Length: 499
Image (cartoon, rainbow, N blue to C red; front, side, top):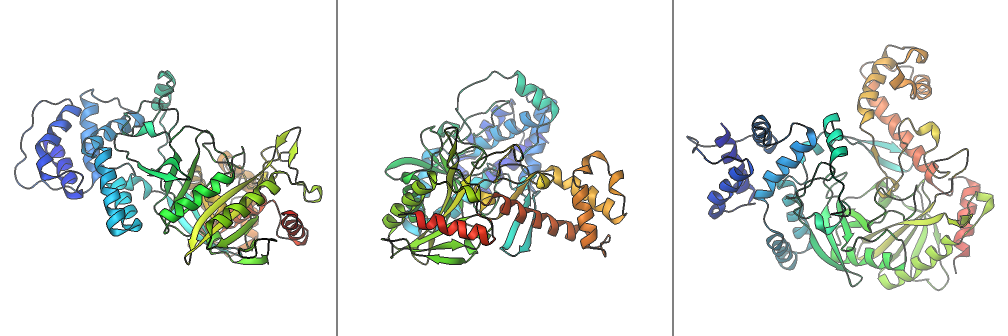
């Protein structure tokens, strides 16, 4: 039985091209060593398999039963990654493959290959990504992408307890560091034996390309500094983003902001996120054209989008870097009390930018989204952050991906929306809702008032649609200039101040 599973994994490696026929006996022996087995019985007949997940489960279950692997979710993930690491070619081979494709077939062929490779090695677990819930909601700003993330493994209590007892280590310094490539992992750090990265040069400095293991959208990649250095939005950031899209014109790339609340989840390591995907914000039109004095050659304007976005387009990337730097410098020091915008309070800076780069019809394009992280007693998590009444759906930071129009919502919502649907169909009074649903009570009353015809057939579609509209409100809350007359006048005042 276990010999069959080992041969299935070898066959999977051959079928995906991760290994070649000459490697078969060697790889089989490496798998036996990993499984702590010292013999192999050749299976009779043709060895077939249905999917990788089933093969790995068989092997890990056997390792657990024999005490080779502990029985908790994290230990199992560490062990199956170790098995896949046996099949994963060395970095030098992967890079040579990528570079050859880039040179002979072009950037898109190179990334197509690397993305499939990252899935074949199970670094991107296809079978987990499939569990994510996804839908699209039509809004006045375009079609917003809504996802409930179920692919990030939720740690079980045994794994959490084991992680607490695990010795703390500063190696690798974080999950983005180059030292993760091939790292075996531990209870408080994921295994990366099957992880490979592609070195890049942007702005004459050493950076790298990899994919996100959680893939929130097509070819969701991470571009990260070779050095473990903090996130910073500065002139050089615009240069790096435009260098990247020059190398990979079919990809967009953007950076989270560099301040808490409006920044990303990892501010300790300078990195960008990109991919082969067009978000609603990229499709949104210019609502008000603008000419910056001295930059008449740069097409510019305010984008019709709930977050405050300036779009710059020009064939000359150097002109974009210069103008973006001017806008960033102006914004960092900009205060407009009438719009409740303060550059700093008590010496703490509040203004920064979330920048996104792409190629458009052979020209370079930068979207600069204005951010501010000021807090008040009324809005302790941030004035330009989802307000409290929306926290039942989205409480976390609004990072780069959300800014562009894709909601990454917490996994708890899957069950909550399912239970809420039942309560709505049964017209259960909100006062009688269980504790987990109480936070949705006011929203549920609004939904029933809006949809008196709500029933068992349409409730799930209605709820999905309403979640999408809550996300549109989340984006409006995070916008520094509101989509009203005063907000638009304030936005124009800022643009006029850039010189």
